[in-house]
Amino acid sequence: AQSVSQHNHHVILSEAASLELGCNYSYGGTVNLFWYVQYPGQHLQLLLKYFSGDPLVKGIKGFEAEFIKSKFSFNLRKPSVQWSDTAEYFCAASSGAGSYQLTFGKGTKLSVIP
Amino acid sequence: GAVVSQHPSWVICKSGTSVKIECRSLDFQATTMFWYRQFPKQSLMLMATSNEGSKATYEQGVEKDKFLINHASLTLSTLTVTSAHPEDSSFYICSAKLAGGLLTLSEQYFGPGTRLTVT
Image 1 (cartoon, each protein chain N blue to C red):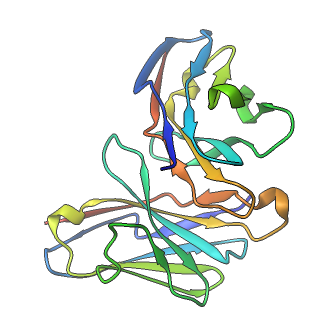
Image 2 (cartoon, rainbow over the protein chains, first blue to last red):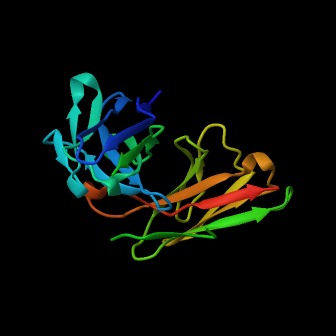
């Protein structure tokens, strides 16, 4: 069965610290990968996505993610977090071109301390 | 950017009544909309895929007679929770798929969600 795993439930960082949130997927065949962010009281927003090509994907607000096929991973990174990055982050996947049903991970809550 | 709205944002209803939640794509046409359910501290679980002009496709374990979905136009899908019970209390989120070329094939835009509380 298709699944997405996020190993960190809650991450607490100080401002300016570097961030890496783990995401692993279990899919057969071609996979599309996404990171969404949900700020407190707001709706899900797309941070970045990977369909094909360069495995290092740059998104909005200084976030990036690297697709490592051999590790079935798509970790989210940011070199220096800000208080405004406090939010919940969801990794999601869909299988192949033409398939748009997303499977979400359980989410990682990020708290950034000023 | 593509905006999706939901109405109402929160609703409280009595057990046994029905509740309708609307999902609208405000500035684009959406041939496909999705309905998710999110329990506290858990992920979004896909309930059903709603295609304009046809019957919705429900995920395994989701009762189609309880969660009625109608996608009557390219900008509106509705989810009706029939004979609601306290266990139906949850956060319901819709998303809409932007109809377009290959690059946007798998991109969805999410609504703000509807908090349903059944007493």
